[in-house]
Length: 625
Image 1 (cartoon, one colour):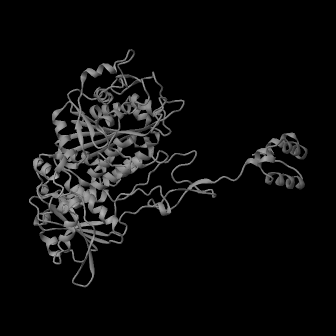
Image 2: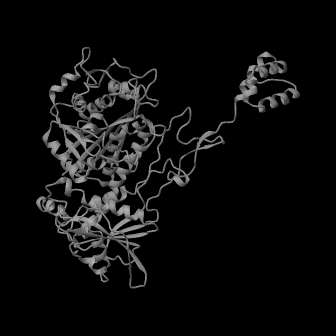
Image 3: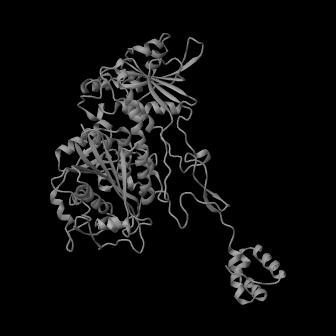
C-alpha cells in the first residue's frame, strides 16, 4: 500500500477526480492536475487508484451439499472449496435417495400402483417378418392375471392395453408404460395405476439365458422404469410395484440398484431453482410379488441399495470439477470409505517421499505438473472366512488431463472424467465394504495426480524410470495415464502380491471409436479371466467386449534410447496401450486391462454414468466362491 499525506482540500479534489469517470482519470489532463496537487510521483498512483472499482468476490453458500454452490457476492467471505492460494482438501458427497424399499403383501394404501405385465411369447423371425408386412394386424385380446385382472372389473385396463398395443405390446415392450389410470376404490377415492412392461413371457428368468444382450438386465430396466414413474408423477409418497407369479426368481438386487441409481441428482454445485430433487415426496416403495419366491430374497433389496451407494460415489468423483477434486481431496474420500466400512477396509496413502522410496518414477514424472502433491491410494478389504483369492483392482486416477505440453485442442472441458477408472475402483470399494463378500481379499489401488503444465512438468523426450526398473521415453505427454498405471501395476504385482489384477481406465479415444459409448473393451491373454469378466459384465448389465492382444504391434513401442516409448502409431492405439501396460505385470499372472473411455460419461445428460463399479463389485464377490 502507498500512504500519502496531503491537505483535506486535496482529498476532496481527488475524490471528485475518482468519481469523474475512467475517461478523465486515464487522460493526460488528469495526470497534470494530480501532479499539481501531490507532485509528479503521486500522479501515477492516483490514476491507478481511480481504476480500482469494487470487484465481487467469489464465495459459496453455507448451506448443505444438497444446495451448496458458487455465487457472486460483494462480501468478503471464505470460499469453502478453494481459494486463490489454497487448493481444496475435501469433497462433498451425495447420498442415495432416502426412500425405503421392502417386500409386502398389501397395496391398498399406495398413492401409485405400478403393475408389471409379461407380454406374449416372442415371435420367431419368420413370423415377425410376415406380421410386419401386414399393416392391418389385429390386436390380440390381453390375458390378465393377478392384480391386473382384479382391477379390470370395469374393463378399463383391457381398454387401455388395446389402445396402446402398438407401443406396449400387452407388456411385451420391456420398460415401457401405459398412460396413468385413475380407478375408483371401495372407499370412494381414486387410485393411480400404471402398467409396466416386463418383456415377453420367456424373459421371466435372468438365469440360464443364451442371449446376454436380451435377457440379462431385465430387473435393472424395471427398476429404472419404476424410478422414472415415481419422478414423473408428483406428490407420490408411497408406491407399490406388483409383479406376477414368476417361473424362477429374478435378481431383486438389480431392481433395487437401478431404482436408486435413477434417482441420483448432483446438487453440490447448484443453487435455488436450479436444484433438482427427483421424486422428492417419495418415502417408500413396496414390492408385492404374487409368488412366494420373493420372501426368501428380502435382503437382496438392501444389497441393491448398498451397491447403489458405490455407483453414486463413482458418479460424484467423475462429476466433480477440478477446483474441487484433486489428489488430496480424492485421498480423503478414500479415507472416508475406510472410516465408514465398519472396520472391513483399511486405508494406506503413500506420499511423495514414500513413492520415491518405491522408485515410482513414471507416476511421479506425471505428478510433477500437478498443483497438489501425489497421493498413492491403497485400500485393503479382507472378507470373512478362508481367503481363496487375493485380487488387485487398479484405477487410473488422472483428476484432470490438459494433455500436458502436448496440450489438448478439443474436449478439454470434459477431461475431469479422466478419473473414471479410479472412480469405478473406489465406488466398488465402497460397495464391497458394505456387501462384505466372503473368501476374498481385495486391494484397490489408485495413483492420483493431474496432467498439467508448469515449469516442472514432463516434456516430450523425457525418459522416466518405472518402479520395476524399465525406462520409458515420453513421446507424447498426453499418453500420461499409462505412465501412472505402470507404477500402480508394479505395486499390485510385486509389493502386494495379488493373484490376479484387473485395471480400469479412460485410456484411449481409439477404444471409443472401436466400441462406441455403450461397451467397454477388455484386453487380456488369460482366457479364464476373460470369461470371469464377461460373466460379471453380463450379470450387471455393464457391457464389455474382449479385444485382441496383437503382439506384433509391440514394435510400435520400440525406442531408440530407452526400453520403450509411451505411445505407438495412430493405428491400433487401444491395443498398443494394453501392450504397454503388460510390461509392468509378471508375464504369467492373470491381468486384464479394461478401457472405459466411452462408457464413463453420458454426453446427453452431461454427467457421469457410474460405469464399472457394479462389474468390479460382482467380479470381486465371485473370487471368494
